[in-house]
Amino acid sequence: GEDVEQSLFLSVREGDSSVINCTYTDSSSTYLYWYKQEPGAGLQLLTYIFSNMDMKQDQRLTVLLNKKDKHLSLRIADTQTGDSAIYFCAEITGTASKLTFGTGTRLQVTL
Amino acid sequence: DAGVIQSPRHEVTEMGQEVTLRCKPISGHDYLFWYRQTMMRGLELLIYFNNNVPIDDSGMPEDRFSAKMPNASFSTLKIQPSEPRDSAVYFCASRAIDDSPLHFGNGTRLTVT
Image (cartoon, rainbow over all chains, first blue to last red):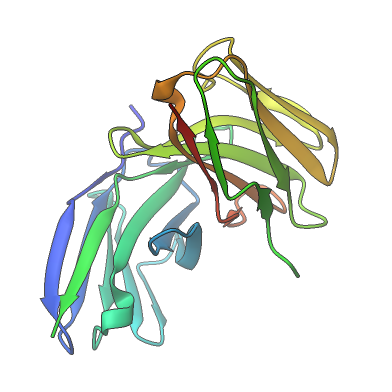
């Protein structure tokens, strides 16, 4: 199947680190993506990782990829209230080059 | 770069009416995608085009839905007749080449009463 799974909700305190997890199904995926959706807006590309990499760091964001377990995670350091949003992981599936999205994780940042 | 532009931002219509959603992809992008987002089903791919040609429309719910891309800078998604269960946010996205990231528009929120 083409299910990409995420937990639905995560709550963290401002200043703490957030870790959002994702499991995907297509072992042939070349790229895996993280998108952020704020209320009333479209999906904004946050970062992505090529499948031959284990880790990618981009300022406060760290992406970890475990290909063996088909597990992807997004770590946000020093989480701010502006990070409150829904975060989607996505993989390219099959030969059709379609992006399949996870269910999204709603991140709530509390003071 | 203006990004992917969708119109209208909001559409409220009565059941049975025809609805047309519009999208202008980023210039130079060869792929265009239409997604639908609902609380129950999340993000669903409806159809995508490559070089203006529909490649995969297996996600289109039923014959009431149709999509066209008459040229590289414009696409429409039409629902005729509309039904309350079509209420959702419809996103258009485009990308340059295979494997490159998708860029999304801000969506059209459709409400069918």
